Image (cartoon, rainbow, N blue to C red):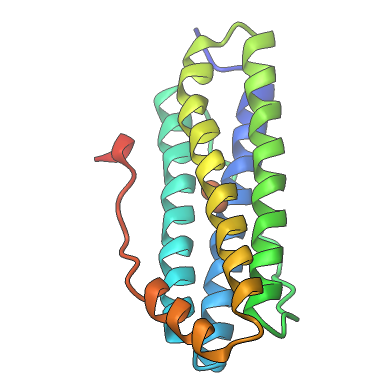
Length: 171
Ligand SMILES: [Fe+2]
Ligand SMILES: [Fe+2]
């Protein structure tokens, strides 16, 4: 079954969302570096690269289904955060927005009886559960650490250990 024009268009929009997420996280990495929080900078950099993989997954899927990649402009990043707490608050909001967009794509795939897309999108549905859980967990830890600078430094050290893992579906 050929992929519908509507599904192609929402996948193209989602490719753009994923690259925008990567751009946001890479900017957060730069801002954390400016604050001398090298561990947070590492965490955001790894996250940016994961978002790049998410975009790549949609691109490959679109091509496999005979679709056309549109590649519109990526929005600028509002980088006015003044703390890592603000960055994780913004991350959580961005992830919640992405979850809503992916849920809408699944609903469209069901409506079109496009079961290949339902199956493909399921990975992203599960991934978003992780993305939201991780962002809110780190946000909570930052809030706990706020009254004790050494706790924030400990958290920075922990986040510095994060390493990039290529998502299993693209291995
Ligand atoms: Fe993503
Ligand atoms: Fe994400």
